[in-house]
Length: 277
View 1 (spheres, rainbow, N blue to C red):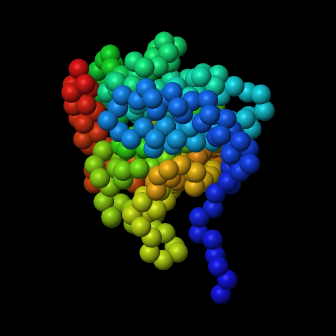
View 2: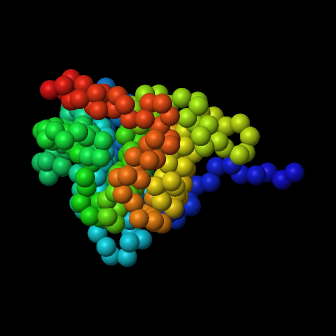
View 3: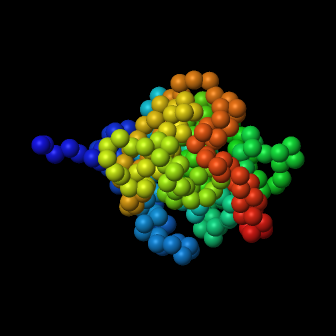
């Protein structure tokens, strides 16, 4: 039997274009970012990873034929990706439950785009007014959602993008968490079983996120990103096939959420907000 390649790169952007842009961005930003790193995490891994993701996104958006793509980085962490995209001329912002030390190292035009907020999607909130420090998951027409290792926000990403007119998304899953913010159970992953023999938990989780995306109407595209991480699956949605609404989102949460649904998500979000205060 012949060799069957199991990992496919460069499906969504051209390889040579990506490599050229990656080198350009690395030469431009890597050294100062690493020298000024103030987080306790490994600067080389995070800097080179975010440079690669920025290069990928810029090329992906270039297919919009002159239309400007605005972005929102949900769960933006250290803010490096927001910094890179902003400095390269893209409009957008990022938010995270906790402000990071690194945010203050960026230029003022980037700092003002980094917000300390927790996400509680509007369609699961009560009728109580939205508080400061809470993002209700309502985005502007055309804003492209990014969730890069955003943990508990990952399964919400295709739903929120679908409820945003003319949107799209790129989700890069990391920790396997469900709609409640708990570690996803094996039973939930079996809702969308893989057909090609036994695969690892991460691969199954990425397939689970893909199935959620498809259920919400997205034509799902996948890319094994060229980043220094074993958790490098990019799940993208740029075309949606049917009308979407919050009732459909709630239906999908029920279908893919098992017994937990989103119970506990709001409580965890408010705890994060309180701990950040």
